[in-house]
Each structure stands twice: as structure tokens, then as C-alpha cells.
Amino acid sequence: MDRQDIEIRIVYKTPQFEAFYNSLPTKVQAKFMYVIDIVTTIYDVSTKFVKHLQDTDLYEMRVSVGSNEYRTILFAIDKANIIEARRIILLNGFLKKSNKDYRKQIEIAQSIINELEQ
Image (cartoon, rainbow, N blue to C red):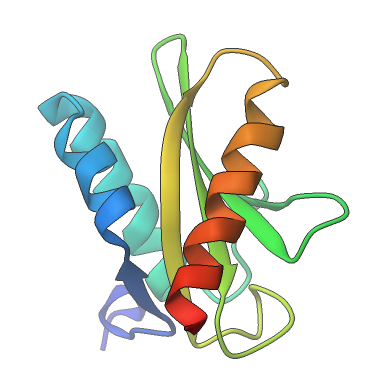
């Protein structure tokens, strides 16, 4: 059995992420699917693809296409960190233009989590 056939994590997507994803060009969507496939099938995901967001419980999924840097805020549902998590949720995505984008996007992600917890 090929290693890629083993699903390590289940990835859930919020409507906010789906709307962002559906707004992207086909080429960018393909790269997102590639990175999501890595997240679901590779145990120790490289920080090239997923990185912890300092001072939060959140992570960013990183997708680069040409000179554009896309980010998706994600949350490990069942564990404290992404490596041990079996279930993760993609909360919201954005095109990174500067480091200032993060605070607003983290606030949006936190509000999505709060909505889901109710």
C-alpha cells in the first residue's frame, strides 16, 4: 500500500473557507488540494506547508503560487498540536499582503470557532 493512500487526518472545511477556496483561480485551487493532501497523509507536516501561529492555538496552512502567498487559518480539533491531531478544520483563508493581515484573520478564525462551539 502506498503511503499516500493512508489518511492520517480528516480535514473539515467551514463555509468561510469554502467561499474563499471557490473564489480562487483553478491553478491556485489545485495547489490548495495538493497541500490539503499533504496535511491528510503526512504525519510530520513540514513548516513549509503548516506553521504554528505564535501566541495562539491556531496554525496557518501555507500555499505559494508564483509570487502570491495564500494562507488558511486552521485549528487542530482533537489535540493540542497539529502533529498529533486526527481532525483539523480549515477556518478562513486569505491572500497574504503583509504581516498586518494576520491579526484580523486570527480574529475572524476565533469568531468562527466560537460560532462552532455554540
